Image 1 (cartoon, rainbow, N blue to C red):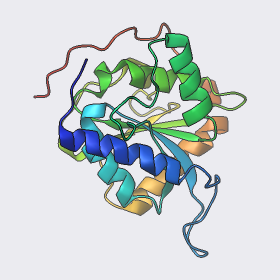
Image 2 (tube, rainbow, N blue to C red; image 1 turned 45 degrees about the vertical axis):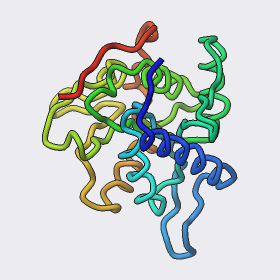
Image 3 (cartoon, rainbow, N blue to C red; image 1 turned 60 degrees about the vertical axis):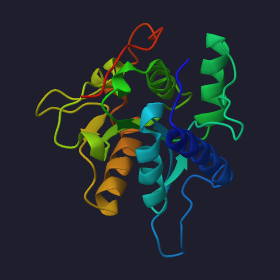
Length: 211
């Protein structure tokens, strides 16, 4: 069992609290009367990056309505089960159910996390319409080329072509991030023919030592 630092555990609890806080906020809600409507975005990430992910979400609640899986106040997992089918169903019905876009927060070891693969898979199989999909680098890997989750890579475009998903460096502005999320949202219908659900789910986490 992985033991996270106290700072990471605190961030995981905060992520769970933010999801509860925004639970009743509807897709398209505006932060203020004059601000753009926001999409409900499920953020998929590796738990070791929880501190960065929390900061990213807190800085961008004007841009999107956040959903993420965190940790309970007592330190237990939000999805307290070892049953694979139950975990996948809970991801779908509790966390992805009313989201329209999935954003994969890319850190050094995101590719190695089986739950990230499951969350991408479930996002792409959402019924009747899949989630839009995009990936955004976290600042800790800016300027590098970290490995990507295989199911995400299968949906990225070859150079100079179009894919179902897109991969971005850390956004320079909220305006850029809003545009990227909207592009992913639009792709649910305009690029649905390019969607690649992929094959067998990752069965276990892989070893990954950040460089």
